Amino acid sequence: MASIPYSQVRKGMVIVEEGQLYFVLDRDLNTPGNWRAILQLKLKNLKTGSIAINRVRPEDKTEQAYLDKREMQYIYQDGDGYVFMDTETFDQISLSREWVGDQMLYLKEGSKAAVVLHDGRPLSLELPQTVELTVAEADPSVKGATAAAQRKSATLETGLRLEVPPYIAAGDLIVVDTERSEYVTRVGR
Image 1 (cartoon, one colour):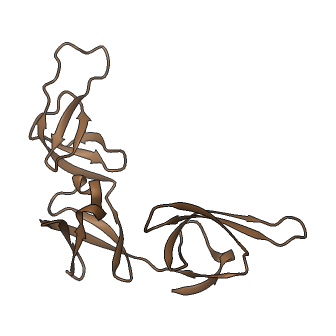
Image 2 (cartoon, one colour):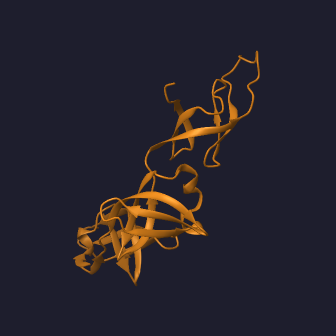
Image 3 (cartoon, helix red, strand yellow):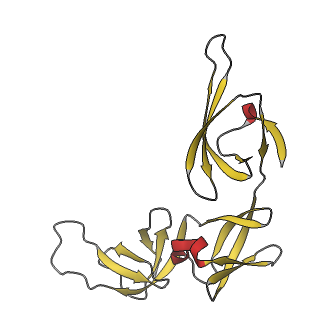
């Protein structure tokens, strides 16, 4: 970690405050006339997810945290966690079910994702923008109902449920947007 003045803190940086890691969401430097400058930082606690606004003097110092973003491959589920392997060093780490949450609905064995680490501890799992998943089962489409754009519910191989167009059938390979949890397109037959 490096000690830097608050005036050098920028949006997107990660800083250490009182032993906690904070992501800088926004910054606003206010210099009212001949008074002292005040820097207002909007910070997100990376452990709890809470957002706080912190007012500081620009000349005071803080610690900048360095994060390591590693590309990892999901290998298998192990009891209560998921095992990921670093694609460069082949080191394996296990991420708990509570920590990963619903993000595993977008990953199948062999899928790659980025894991952000700080001092060897995982902070976040960043999914790719889109993933390709196979439709396990799809509701039957309603014939003749073409007045409006039709959608039907489908369950994918990972257990994810989403709305798809009526022509999608079980066994089709589709592209899913991981941010919006939406169907994008069908992969060519």
